[in-house]
Length: 81
Image (cartoon, rainbow, N blue to C red; front, side, top):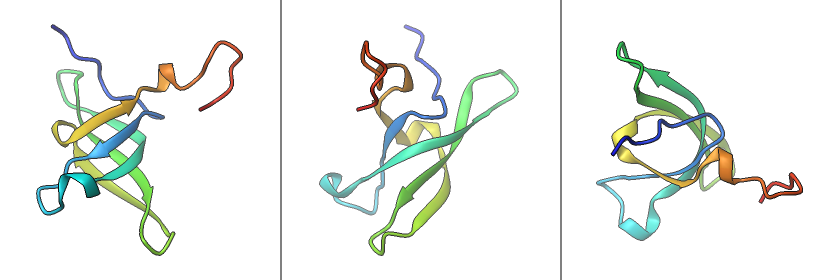
């Protein structure tokens, strides 16, 4: 089964081995970084930290769990969830 590549606008959960599973951060994919074979292997993400400051990080795609794909964030009327 072919997996869908990450896309800018996807909402993801950042898997973190140093944090308890219930405390993983939610983030927005800002930029998907393709490898030579065209698959997305890394992504630039943004999220708000505990001080409500916007943080940008780059993470491996294998450590990201897509919660809301960009395509599914809009309903029939075009409203964003």
